[in-house]
Length: 228
Image (cartoon, rainbow, N blue to C red; front, top):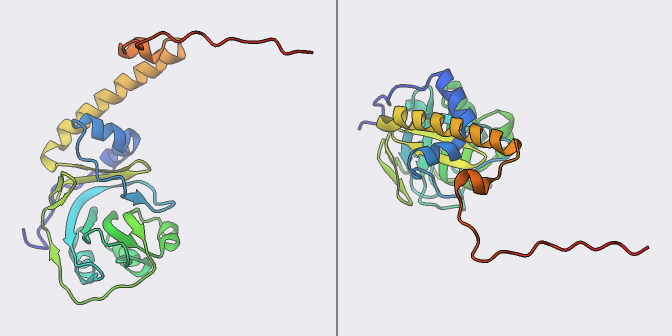
């Protein structure tokens, strides 16, 4: 895939609103408990909700030249998904690049490394997820690779795949599976709403989920009258 090749169909605002309501945990469960990025990928404080199509970037640790090109070449609605080799001692993304990305309609960024200027990025309202935060700067010498398939702990991300991030973390959904996963997530949401309604009517999770009984019955806790 060439660096400036178009991603798959963009997410509509209605689809983004639905994804935000469902949340990453429900989407992860709905696609067979896969697609979750490692738990170290965390939103910066106040990052907000992230959704869009993946624009993949592979860059050498301590170098962010590839990211400057990615911002220029990515399409509105894309999420930059960046492999820095998990190197944490350099902030490859900051306030200046965030302003550039916002001007081009980029939806957010997920970095397998560190970012900096996190307070300003949050104030700008740009969703950013990373493994770390580091104030140290970078070189701008290595062109890196754009539009390549990325892999993290069994999760494969191709350009155009759907990326969703919230307070629980980040989940990737294959573009060709998106409609199926979304429908399964909606069905799961409806089932969970039904369960919670029954819990509020007095039923228990043990009954509703058909959970096994404990191996031994725990004696009820005794209560003692307080001495006057």
